[in-house]
Amino acid sequence: MSDLQIGLIALGVLLILLVLGFNWWQDRRVRRKMQTHFPASEQDPLLGAGAAAAGAASGPAPRREPGMGGEAPRAQAGQAAPVDPGTDADDAAEPDPACEVVIEINFAEPVRGAELLPYMQSLRHVGRKPMRVFAETDQRRHRAHIHAGESYASMQLAVLLANRSGPLTAIEWSQAWARAQDMAERFDATIEGPDQQAVLEQGARLDDTCAALDTQVGLTLLLGTAQPAAEVLGVARDAGFVPDGNRLAWPAENGVARFTLARADGAAFDAGMGGIERLYLLLDVPCSPADSRAFGRMVDVGRDLAARLRAELVDDQGKPLADGSETVIDERLQVLFGQLEQAGLPAGSERAQRVFA
Image (cartoon, rainbow, N blue to C red; front, side, top):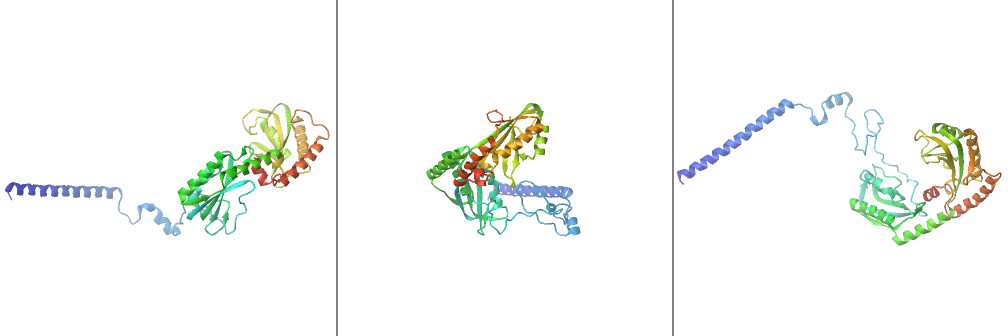
């Protein structure tokens, strides 16, 4: 080996040693800076500076379960509210085969409710048809709502077959099926459902039945000059009306609205600063509980409101009510209530309110 080769080898070894020495020096420099800014402590910095003192004073800190969205209300100060695990009893609500069609989603392995909850928002509507979600836990319990603390073996998507927007369409059914497929892909599941043509035919039949029975009866209150909305609202509440979205409702004993009161412009009673010149009373017959004086009761309340508001009560044609007209109309409504019952759509029932929405 020549002197040149030996010299080059020695130079290479020297360079390597210099690099190693420089790296060691840099490492010590960084460590000293870190110790200056973060002095050594027996307390784990990830737990916070005050955790040890708090633990010594009050015992171990309570375990916090992960949650969805905002922070849950505390049962006691310093303690997180427990995740609702559901109950051992089956939920009462279930799909209604008379007006809903079901898509079944069967999971290969039970899925935690906390994993399913983020997708529930997308399962509320397809087009103009609402959907309801049901599920069965891994303990074979029926649920009408998903609970974060439970595990589920299957889900059911109940799609409404018809409402006042018409029968379920092929596009709406395809959207529902696509949502089910998306859930199946995300959570390793299989889906089952009826044939599309059969579903569309069932929806069309239900829509025909509802169209033949759909009846609404209205009255109008003419206030003359515009009256402040706040005053009108106060008078209506004093008369017995209760809030119901943008409208006011006259409730039956079971809480279902017998008839409603609305502004002519459709706005909420507390919206804007303008006055009110006209009000509508509406008896939505399929959605109102059967009553031998369904229309007569609304007339009585309308006349009371008219007196309170110094208004004129007229029918939906703008004419003053004829004496005895309420008796004739109530007799006709009794026939309609009977027809709704025979069609499996009892007036005021949950099913009727679902399909006549």
